[in-house]
Amino acid sequence: MCDGTYTIGEIKKAVASKLSHSDEYIDMLVNKTINFLNDKCAIHLQEEKLKKPMDFGFSGDTKAKSDRILSAPLFVIWEITGLCNLRCEHCLSSAGDPLPNELSTEEAMRLLDYLETMKVFNINLSGGEPLMRPDIFDIIDYASQKKFSIDLLTNGALVVDAK
Image (cartoon, rainbow, N blue to C red; front, side):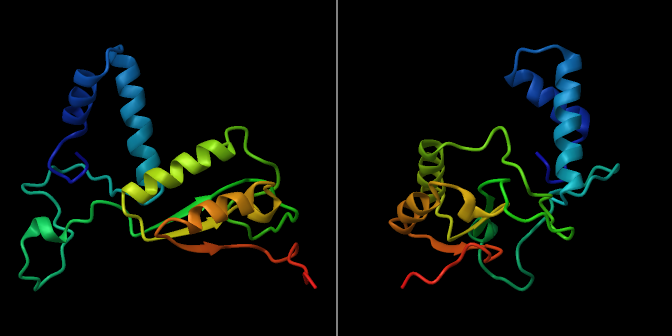
């Protein structure tokens, strides 16, 4: 519903029809979600309602609009851990300590299964420092059995010659 043709009020009504919570909770939930997405540049919050949905297709494309819509992201950047062996000032993740809600190995495998069903093409494993995660090679091995292109974004400090 974030294509510009719905007001925030209409979005709140739609969410309220699916959830049995108080109006205050629905307001908080929708506002928090919209502000988060806006802060992450995933949506562009605007006051004026559009007359027609945003068309994210390519100009000059003669294919039907439904053929131009992606059903999944082409790639996923997965901050697999917050744990890091360095405390770089320039770090975008403010990494250092593991996050309290990091996925277990089993949850990570289930996420990879889900991303495969969505037909995600590329997965970037980053962090923190992904090599600090004890199960990282199990996760990479499992992901490599899928149809993903896999990138490991590391600071390189833990990479050693395996002679």
